Image 1 (cartoon, helix red, strand yellow):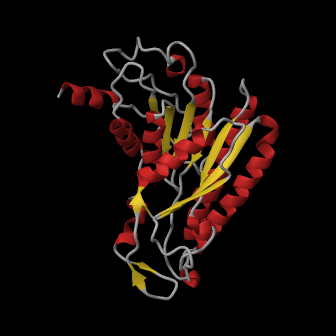
Image 2 (tube, rainbow, N blue to C red):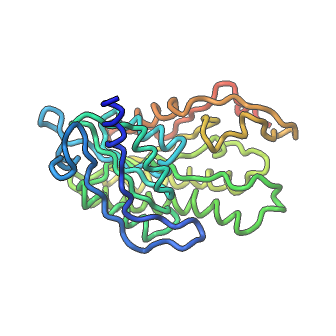
Image 3 (cartoon, rainbow, N blue to C red):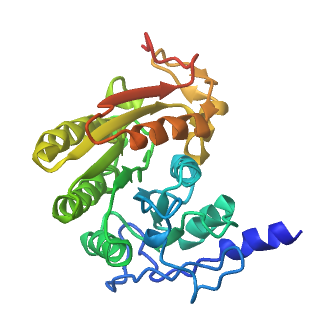
Length: 311
């Protein structure tokens, strides 16, 4: 019971600014990262800053920003990075969901890597700038961005897709990914030592679409172009960029795969799914490589999903 109490205390994170909903009114104030919550008997006033945490007094922990960290793939990747001793900044629109991710990580040891939440709407340039400014001010640098925030949008026939629904998907999946990549790029180029890594969450839809998914598919094809351009533009500054294309990970967003989803032949079918932790392990491997090496593109999917030969 004492351990459970410590886990609960470690996950109590006070959000500094609540991000607005897409298309809603967002607060323009820049968030300030909260001090670390108490861990292992230390108070938030006496605990050292996470960037000072060292293994045997040697190397500071690296700092990762994970967007869309309130659920699904983002939550699984955050947990995998914490297991690999990263300091992780959780970003997403829903403060409560981010706090739940922090709680599930359940840090209890004095030398555990810090997890901090910053509610952020990635479609808002001011909030994205505030996120990365706060990370640099608190931790001094950004070593990794997992560019993960995304949405499927409405699955409707192309001629029934409303303009606002198209824009909502493009704003999150493409513009949001660009804004976060740009802010991370700026930080990585300016910091000393220079460099870092950006991992974009693509999709198997970057290669083969589903029916009634034109907005989502178009943005995931665009993500591949974003990844290639980032890789090229990052070369002079030791900024590596790769992309992970995911198929049928079991998350809140993919629930319909398990109840029946439209196939290319017009039939409905239940599709196999895989555990999100299998994806997270791949991202953690990509993140752990030295900057002299890069996984440019990786595809992780449920083995028997209808992807190879789809249609």
